[in-house]
Amino acid sequence: MTDRGAATDAVPVDPQEATRREEPRRVAPRPVGSGWRQRLEIAFFVTPALALMAVFVVWPVVSAVRMSFFRWKGFGPMDDFVGWSNYDLVLHDEVFRDAVAHNFTIVVLSIVVQLPLGLGVALLLNRRIRARGLLRTIVFVPYVLAEVIAGVVWYQLLQPESGVVDGLVRAVGLTPPDQGFLGTPDLALWTVFVVLTWKYLGLAILLFLAGLQGVPDELYEAAQLDGAGWWQVQRRIAIPLLAPTIRTWCFLSMIGSLQLFDMVWILTGGGPANATTTMATYLVSQGTQRHNYGIAGAASVILFVVGFVMALAYQVFVLRRDTAVER
Amino acid sequence: MSSGRTRERAKPFGSGGPLVYLLALMAVIVTLGPVVYGALGGFRSNEQLASDPSGLPDPWVWSNYQHVLTNAEFWQYALNSTIVAVVTTVVAVLFGVMAAYPLARYRFRGREPLFMVFVLGLLFPAAVAIIPLFILVTRDLGMGNTYWGVALPQAAFALPLTVVILRPFLMAMPRELEEAALIDGASRIGIFWRLAVPLSAPALVTVGVLAFVASWNAYLLPLLLLQDDMRTLPLGVADYSSEHSSDTAGVLAFTTLAMIPALLLFLAMQRRIVSGLQGAVKG
Picture 1 (cartoon, rainbow over the protein chains, first blue to last red):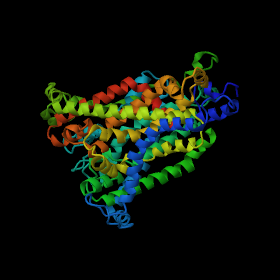
Picture 2: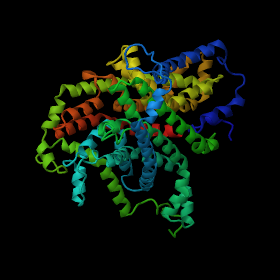
Picture 3: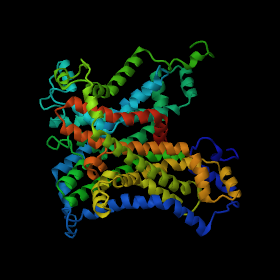
Picture 4: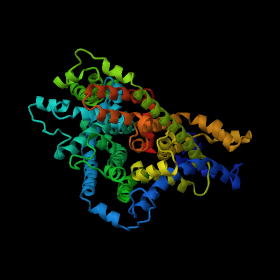
């Protein structure tokens, strides 16, 4: 460790480490280091952000919790306290249970399908092939498009009979479903998942490529000298070193899958026959279309609790390994 | 490979064989296929689309794009999207860098818990609070169907990511600069404006682009809060698509034109978006 301290380094590797290492050096020289004046400055800087979040994040979340204990149709005073019965209704509602199952199906499918696919393309693009930069840009294009815009284009592609997808399926000698891929209850969720994969694979590829940049060339060279083949090098060196990035991506993917709304709303609206409802589409349709605000509130709370518990569990059991090493 | 010290040593894994290029080509086709289909579809007539869904324009039809470009609603939606995104971005970046500054440069009790507030904020998706947010904005604040009514909540939900990305950047600012400024008699607020903000400009652009793109693409909140001529482009696209469902070519032209601003911004800001996302993941 050099005397200069990490703060002067070009790369902010770990900011907390940097300040900690600085600590012994700075005992005296702090002109404005203490007292009410510093507190005032901190308040000046932090208050706008905290106020905005208090009004538009914390307060609505608290209201959702409160709302979930009342039967309320959106007008008049909210005074019909019903205790846990909204939760009871939601948790016994077949549609909501299916919605939870759909969310978890997407969570699992994303990891099982998108992870190997994204990893494969990233390893592929990590080679020194021609036009690599262009390829990287192209692969990321779907991620930049609005989910709605991507959804509308795919909706057209997936039109029964007249759509391009049905045409392609017929071209290879298969029969597309009569109601179209989005109109057939057994296929709709899978179809939504395919579109989601198209939309979000770019993010996985991009993150994995970034992680691969961190693998020192010397390691590859050393392995090659030892006679390892391409696949062996990827499997023994690149992928293990990529593990933290992979775990982070899994986390992001999981959270995104649990909150899924836009794409489903555009492609199917939750149909056909509730085959593609998610927790988010359920609560929006309960709230805005049926004005069952209490039920929407209960569904919101459940959505949050599910997400929070999964995030926490993931943090404790999976991501801890990464932070334990870094911090 | 055998002749040790030449450059060949590093090469064997570098270049790819024909199989690699074939796979890359497939990835490109699958990725761009739907986008190209939309763009080309806008140049076809509905009859062409009906007779051969996957054909090329023959002849090329310009009227679909012309209709969209002369459609006052389209420009209104684009204007609304721009205003909402700009307000969201300015508020999120300004408040975000202000909050990140003391979290990075001051040492005080409760600093880490305060930072945790922002980290926890990442876990609150807008979907959870959407119904109360709708009630709050429309009834309590009377900001339903206004730019601010959408932009302020969006900025609030963008703040956690902004703070989380900006803090390490501000922490990396050399302490010597700050000390020199203090000795010259600058106030902390002066240091913030004249030192911290200019020095973290690249990071500010990164978080700004992320906030802008998120707002530009947002659907759920505008869907509940904006109606009629206040609608943003994603709402416009979705509504146009359902209102003119028989006019496939028109829908495709409308959708393609709505894609362009986000794509251009992405191409211009590609490196910033990429580094921002990577920073968010590592941070």
